[in-house]
Length: 528
Ligand code: NOJ
Image (cartoon, rainbow, N blue to C red; front, side):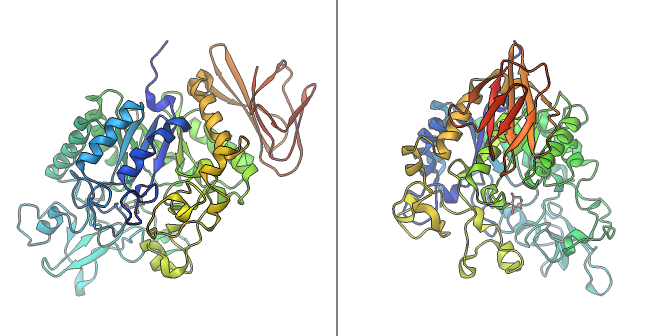
C-alpha cells in the first residue's frame, strides 16, 4: 500500500496563541498554555497544529508584522519554551506548523530600518522603493488591503515604499536574490529545529510587477475591490518561487508548505499547487470557506475544487480562521447546522483544518467599540467590525474568564461562556465536543475517509448532499440535510444494505426501501 503522509491523513487544528490559554497572568495566551493543552489536542484526535505567528513583533497586526524571524515573541515565551513545546508535541505525535509572514516584515525589523536609512545602504533594495510621480504623487494606484494607498512616504529616503497591508508592514522585495536567500535561510533554520512545515501568509502577494504598472479599474464595492489586481499580486512568475520553496522542502521528508492564497477565485488558488504538482504542497481554498449555507453551493464549490486539482493534488478544506467570522455564527448560530458542517468538513477528500473553539461551537464574539484592537476594525467601524470577534479567548470552562486567564483578557470573553464551554461539554455525551471527537476518531480509523475517492450522488434533492468515499473494499456514503425541514432523498438502486456507522444515535435518517427520510439537519455516515 502506498505510503500516505501525515498531513494528508490527519486533521489539523489552528491555534491563535494569544487566545488559547494564558499561564503568565497577563491576559494574553502563551506557548506554555499550548503545552498544557497538548493532552487535550491529543484527546480531540488532531494530527497537527498550525500556530499563528509566534515571532517577535510590535503587534500592529498581531504577529503578522514580524521583527525577528529567528526568535520567539517574549509575550508568548522563549526559545526554551518553544523547544519544550516541540518535545511535548513529538511525544504526543502532534506535528507543528509555523505561520510565516514573508511577503512583508515589520517596519521595526532591522532590515527595514537599514533599508530606509538611505538610498545606498547594503539593504537599500530589500524592500520595494519607488520615486514619486510628478508633484509628489504616489508611484501608481495600488491600494492596501487594509485601506488607503499601498504606498507611504519615507522622509529619510525621499521615496515611497510599498505596503500591501499596514504601513507598519513594508513589502519585502522578493526579486532581490539576497532577500530570497535570507528568507530560505529562515525556512531551513526552523526545519532543522524540527518543525513540520509552514503556513505561508499571503503567498499570492510575493512578487509584484517589475514595472510597477497601475492596476486597471473594475466595478466593486470598496476602493480595493475597484481594481483588477493583476500587477500587485498573482504575477505569473510567482509560481517559480513556489517551486523553489517546494524544492527546498524536498530536502526534508514529510515537511510541508501550506499556502494562504486569499483568493475567491479557485482557479488562482489551484495554480499555487504548480503546473505539475511542483508548487506548494497544499493551499487554502477561500471559495469553499465563503459559501452560504446551501447544499448546492457547497457541492458546486467542492466539485470545482476537485476538478481544478485533479487526483494528483491534495485538497484542503476549512470553514473558519482568524480573519473571518466564525462559521457557527455565519451559519445562523445553530448547533444542528454546526454538526452538518463538521461532518462535511471531516468527510471530504482532503485535509480538514479546524479553528480553535469550533469543536465546542464557539460563536463570533461581540466586541464593544472601545475594545476593538484589530486595525481593520479600528479603521472601518461601524461598516466592518474587524476580526477581533473570531479571536476571542478559548472557552475552557464556566469559571472566571472562561478559564482562559486569571487576568483581564486581551479581548473580551464571549458572553455565552457559562453555557458554551469545554468542561460542560465534556460531561455531556451528546455535546458538540463529543460529536467532533467521535467523528475525528472515526476519520482517523477510516481509509476511505483518509484516502478514498469522492463521488457525489444525484439524489433528486438540492437541499441534501450525498457523496460516496471509497478506498479498496471500504465504501462509505455520507448524507447531509442542510435544510431545517424534513427532506427525502432517493438513493440509486445499486445502494442496498446500508448500515449507519455515524453518529451512533440520533442520525435523523430513516430508510424506507430506496428512499431516505431525513429529519431537519439530519446526517449520517453509512457503510455500504
Ligand atoms: C493574512 C493573515 O491571515 C492576516 O491575519 C494578516 O492580517 C494578513 N495576512 C497580513 O499579513
